[in-house]
Every structure is written in structure tokens, then in C-alpha cells.
Length: 97
Image: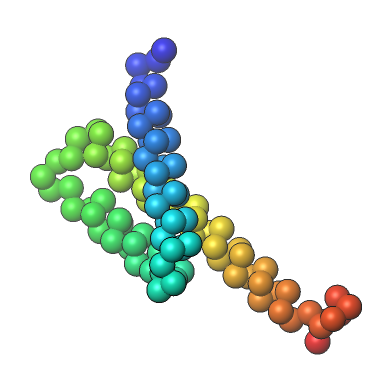
């Protein structure tokens, strides 16, 4: 077991929890939109920059993981929306309208 294995494990745990949180919000809250997620990501960036009290390595790992998860989920959601827009442009029979 490496010296920094705990950091990777902590990152992965926080990352997965953040993905689950966003996925659940999307499923259960009809008012949760892609803009809501963008706002959450912006807030996470602000919190990351507000480290004047010193979070320490555990807090930094947590923030980095949450930001990475939000970024990944946002990119995935944007791809879904792009694909849905492309699909809606196609007329029946697979031909563009």
C-alpha cells in the first residue's frame, strides 16, 4: 500500500458520492436543471478559492473530487442534450428535416 493511497481512495469516494448526489437531484427534483448544476459547479469553484482558513489536504481532496464530478456530469449532460437536439432535427425515416 502506497503512502498516498488514502488520498486516491478519499478522492474516489468523494467523486462517486458527488455523482450520485447530482444524479439523484436530477431524478427527484423537477426544478433541477443543467443550469442548476452549472451554478453548483460555480459555487464549488468559489469555495475552492476561499481557502483562507486552510482546509488541509483532506478538504482539498474533497473539493477537487466534487469539482471533477460536477465537471464530468455536466459534460455528459451537455452531450445528452446535444444528441437529443440532433435527434429532434431528424424527420421520420432518419432524414434531416
